[in-house]
Length: 170
Ligand SMILES: [Zn+2]
Image: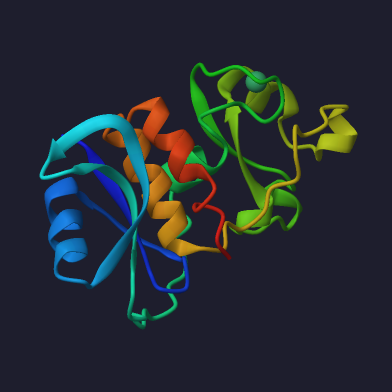
């Protein structure tokens, strides 16, 4: 089923919905279609929508992204931040807990078991194992959840490419 990225009137991503739901919003005059899939006719002169934007602003409460294993893995693309491999991933504390390192977004990274064991109780500098990129807190809850959902539901590459420019809202 074709999925549609639903944006707030501010262009902030809100949800992923079905194309039918998106078309109902558009036909009722509640949303406008911003991106369509060319050459995919869905009848009555309409093309398959990919991104729609609400005309009225919907207020959404701020939410923090929970620091969970799954979320850390998603942020780091299921990639070891030391060697770039994808196997046997664990969570590494950049500054080890034994040295006062905290459970915080900027102190945890995905690391393969081998790198984690090699690094052991040392900082990246002490171990001579530089990080691929400094770990940061992902700031936008909905964008983060949407990208996670897109990965889980195997949203096709073409759709993701068309969504991408709206996914970095902050
Ligand atoms: Zn590794």
